[in-house]
Length: 266
Length: 237
Image (cartoon, rainbow over the protein chains, first blue to last red):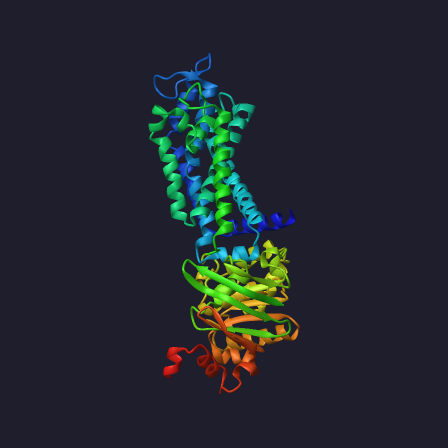
């Protein structure tokens, strides 16, 4: 266990001293803030006009229960930015294939399983912090709008659970991207694979003709996990979404472990 | 002690290493010589667990490299071609390596001083010269104060002062009863360092023995090398 702990600390140190990881993190967080600014005024107006029976009209002609709609909006904002997190994971994984650093890594930590576990743990830890920051930014913008209506809304159990679901999605999806990049040994290909997986859901092609297949894709699983089924068209339940995301992370991690162990460290 | 026994490494249809057997003993510097592409780096990569052997075995102190717990405390290695991410600072590069093997943080400073990179510790590796990168690689090999050193082309990119520094370092290491295995294709420098010599050509060992045994009947190690490997360019000289 101490071997894994030392390796995890080393992998974490690698992430924290990798300028590419800081740049990707900074860009994602800055983008999140920028995306939240334009609609903030409109959202504040909608909150100011919440009816006495708790109905909000965020989108014109679509009245909804305010609490659910606001928490859904907060989760949706985080989810939207969470789609960029796999790029960060691929940058972290891809550092091994720049200057053939993988050789040095395997020299320092030659056992495949502890090395892979350490890499996954360190990445999960770093990504979870970034995901918490994203959730925090989403919450800050929502709080600015709702503080006069219901200042305690964002510390309710449902709100915190929503953030927890987002962090779970972010970590599991990033581990998938990380493991794919480690398997294909190329940052760009890792990013492309992730984009393809996201695109399948974004096009909504499968959701219409085979929703049960669509539910097996990571972004669909994330929607199923995070969004309110009363407001959104979803293809499966929350538990299914979580299992699918965990399944992707597990299967790709095994594939990464097999290739890491079987192929020469180049 | 490094023991390589019947080691083979094939890449598809090419035999990079073919039934290689030799030993590097404690207290001695063993030079592993051969032309480019002869199989030196492949042999060392298999020894260090980076590449899988097609056949045979390579042991360090009677164990496979990957079976060593915190291996950098036993074996220090410099690999040709494997390097740090260019954007990372030298001190950060050594720090993650140290953490991975529970090597005290102070040791990072010590080895940076030792290799003459203390002033460049906070510079990004991409701003280092070739010689500085080589020194950084050697610093990484020395981090764990290992009993065994395996260095692939350690003087590549070093200036004459650096070459002399490496020579003294390796001699001191061997004098302490430690094992040193270095690969090189630089004959003159190697002749000044080595106690034992192993020459490989086209994946096969062509001779192994003490420096005196290998050079017997030849004017120099370089002459012995060309005679034994039948190097065409050398033969034309």
